Image (cartoon, rainbow, N blue to C red):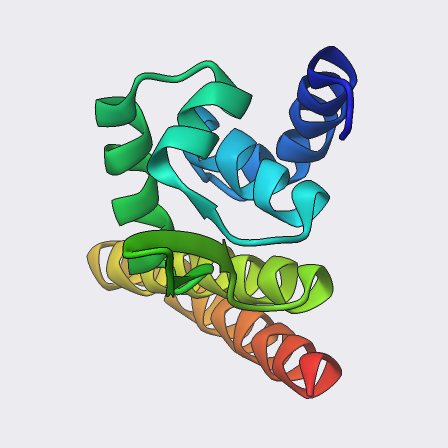
Length: 139
């Protein structure tokens, strides 16, 4: 079994990548633990490993399920969770979400600022092209 302190330290470090894409800290830490442990974990195990309460784990798992980053599996009559995507694909999916959100924000602000509309349209096009590159890369 992995030493808990080492596991938490590495999970905190890995979680910084997820935090950079806007994943809330508890969800980022828990997702990192799931990648590191490499087996399905139930709420109790996640709570013990992360140090978060079961209610915090529940909230974090809802976010991760919403992002389609974890899958629920049955384990000894309990629900357990594991990452639903390889790490590189999860990061690509998060990057797509961030870039698409930026493109949408540009589009909305460009409508309110006619003097910037041409430049905003160009930037939005570049962001859409980036999304296509990311999607092609993750295949």
